[in-house]
Image (cartoon, rainbow, N blue to C red):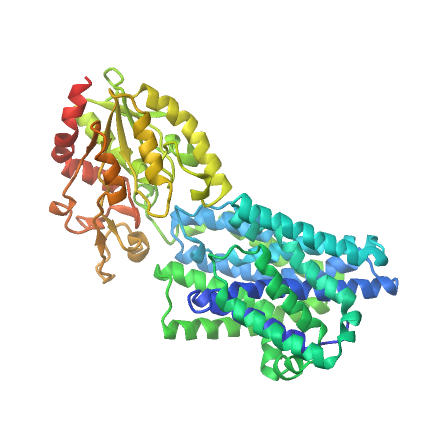
Length: 613
C-alpha cells in the first residue's frame, strides 16, 4: 500500500475533472459533484492501508499520523484561504464582507460543512458566489481523519470487516432517513455521519482486496470497465435535484472501490496511468482548492453565473498555473520538512490568516465608501426574522395606537419605512413583525423550507404573529408570492379563513425590481456613467393562483400602483441608487417611493383606515 500507484493519481484526475466541469456548468455535467465521493473513497482506501500496514509492523503512532495529515492538507489550504480574502477584500461589497469573514472562520477550523448546511443565502452573496463553499469537503476529510485511526487501531482485525459493514449500513440508513423522511437533504449532503460510509467503503475494500483478487483478472477487467461506465453514467444521470447522498451514493463509491483494488486492469494501466492523467492527479488537491474560489470570485465580481468560452479558458489556465505553483512550492515542500521546522513555518500563514480575517472589514472600507442606507437593510430589523427582538411600531406615534398590523416576507420589511413615512404624513401608526422569504402566516408545510433552521425560525415568528393578528383590525400584507412554495396558496386560504369578518386585509403591491444587483454592477451608490449595463425591469403582479384566493374574500383589498408612471430610471432616482440588491429597495429607495406615490397609496387605503378609526 505504500508503493506509488500511478493509476490512483489518474483516478484523482477523473474526480477533479468531474467536479471542475460541474462547477463550470452544472447543466453540462449535472452529476459531476460525485467527483467528491471518489476522493472520499480514495482517502478511505489509502489511509486505511497505510494505518493497517504500520499497525502490523508496530510502528504506527497517532502523533505521526495526525502531523502527517496536517503537513499534507493545511499549509496550501491556508495559503488559498489567505489569497481568497486578499482578493475578496478588494471586490466584495461591505454588505457581504462580514458573511465572507464568517465563512472563512468556519473553513479555517475545518467545520464549514456544519456551518454551510445551516446557511440561508436569501440576503447577500449566493452559494455559487461563496469562494469558501468547496471547503466543506476538506472539513469532512479532516473530521474523518481524526476518527479513522481510532477505529483501525483499537478494533481487532478479525472484527474489522464486520464493524465496517455495520457502520456503512447503519449510517446509510441514517442518510436515507434524514433525506427521505425528515426532508433534511441539505443537512445530509454536508453531514459527516452521512458521508462516513463513503470512506468506509474504501477502507473495506482495502482490507478485503486480496480476497477480491481471487475473482481473476478477466472478471476484474470486466468489473473495472463496468465501474468506469457507472461513474461516467452517474455523472450525467445524477443532478442537484437527486436525493443525494442517500442510497445513490453506493453506485459511484463501490465503482471507485473496484477500480482501486484492480490496479492491473486495462482501465487502470492504459487510461488512469497515462502521463497526463497522472500529472493532473498529482495536482488534483491544489486544483480542487483553487478552481472554485476563482469561479466564485469571478461570478461575484461580474454578478453573473454563466461563463463565456474565453472566461472558461482563463479560469482553466489560472487554476492550472496556481495549482502548479502551490504543488511544488508548498505541498511538496511542507511534506518533506521535519516537525519543528514545519510548525515554525506553518505559524506564519496561520497568524496571517487570523490577522487578515480580523482586519477584513476595516480594509474593505478603504475600497468602498458606500453608506449603509444604500447597501443593506437598516430599518425595522428588530421586528424581522433572525434579528427579531420585539414587535415594532412605526408611523405617527403621537396619537393613540391604531389597530393596524404589517406582516409579510422581506418585501414587507422594505415596506416598513414606506408605511412609516405615509403614517407620519397621514396620522396613522402600525405594528409590524416580518420574516425572510416565508410569509408569516400559518399553513406552510415543513417541506417548503430549504432547511430545518428556516422552519424553526418561521415557527418562532409565527408565535408572535398569531398574537398580533388577534389584536389587529387592519392587516397590511406584502410578499413576493414565490412560485416554489407549493403550500403557499393553501396557507393564504387558511389564514384568510381564520380571520374575523371585522378584520380587513390590505394587500400591498410588489415594487419593480431590476434583473441584476445594481450595487455590484455600479460599485457605488452614485450612478456610474461608464457602467453601460442595461437593466431589465420586472413589474410584478399578483400570481393568478393567489389572486384567485383573494377574490373569494370580501374583506381583502388589493392596492395597485402604476410604478412606471414616475420611476423612469430604475434602479436609480436622480442618479442615486434605490436598491441594495436586485430584489430590495434600500432606505433611500423607500423614501422615494413613499414620497412619489403618497397620493396613490393613500387613495387605496384611506377608505379602509377611516372605516376603523
